[in-house]
Length: 252
Image (cartoon, rainbow, N blue to C red):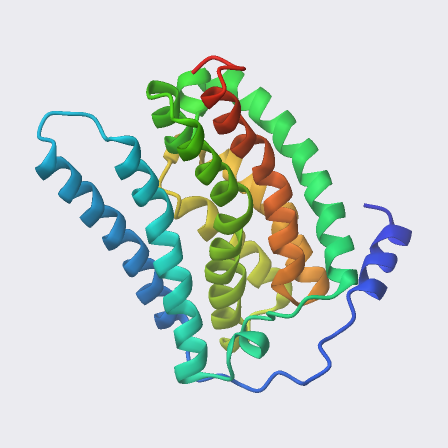
């Protein structure tokens, strides 16, 4: 990115109007939230296997397993900011400004191009089967109904990124700032943890590429609104694929 563009983004990303007071939660809060996320996913999977021993996951279970863990994790993260901090607006940088939207769109479009190129190259390295996300793989083996696909499309495109940004570029970012890490160190570690915590080893490198522009949007604005927008732009094409499979426009 050129120095001129860098300065322009920095000028648009004005600091919050209110000074951020020190919160009383730290890295332990993120670990609790991640445990809630992980355990809820495991519990849903275990219940599904008890109800359907030896059978595949139903679309209903797939939808519940996709949506409930991030919603629970984000909800617990927000509760931490209310219970041990100053609320999500100050602690998580939860405020919306047109400048944030513009920065988010720019980084989102840059990320979309980079991710598309990286996905193409990564598919050549590990193969189509191994490059597909867990959700994409499940949908490919079980064509969803139009209603289910529409719900999944809206969640993957709009709601899921909000939940993940609250957890990673909100709670985790704030926890590392509390440890007095430099802003670039915080950006780097949150990007790595974001990629690794998806628990998809063959896609970790690709997830790192995805996470870089999203994290940069957070870095330049100091708020998660920009990273949410960048994340939503990045998720649009995978979410659209679910919808196109349901309408039989593209093969499962």
